[in-house]
Length: 214
Image (cartoon, rainbow, N blue to C red; front, side, top):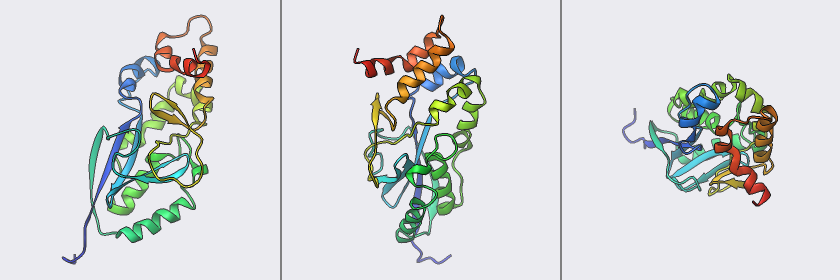
């Protein structure tokens, strides 16, 4: 290796969008333990890069409304220059990682960071993150909510985006489609019309309050 080649540090920022609720409620709602609902970003060249419903975005490390990450994983170093990396991101942003290509389960922020991590360092992100969609969808509750969840676009505000974004908020977690929160609650209530599980309201109950203003 050329001793004069500049090395750039590459990190993975990991955020739990459930803010700890997944760990305590997933055994009841899904029948299995989930430690978090993971959003990830790549940090390199002094910035944080992530993919969401509006496409590829960047910000200063920890600069979105999610705040500082829950976990930081050092992925190693890369010899890829910032100029080449930006050209690479531009290419992705015009093709496979346009905002309209976002899919919560199949093509999301973690799909993006896993691909970028391999481009920069040859390493993949932890499997417990990339395996999360299949873990959720393997449960009856996950299958019931899939038609609604497929319409959700996670888009942490605070980055530099390309094009307009439609957002609404729930306790600091943005969703691209405002009606989704009410639809999720209605879907659960339709399945349990006489005896809805109390844990459902712990997760989704405040959504109806936001929607109705009560």
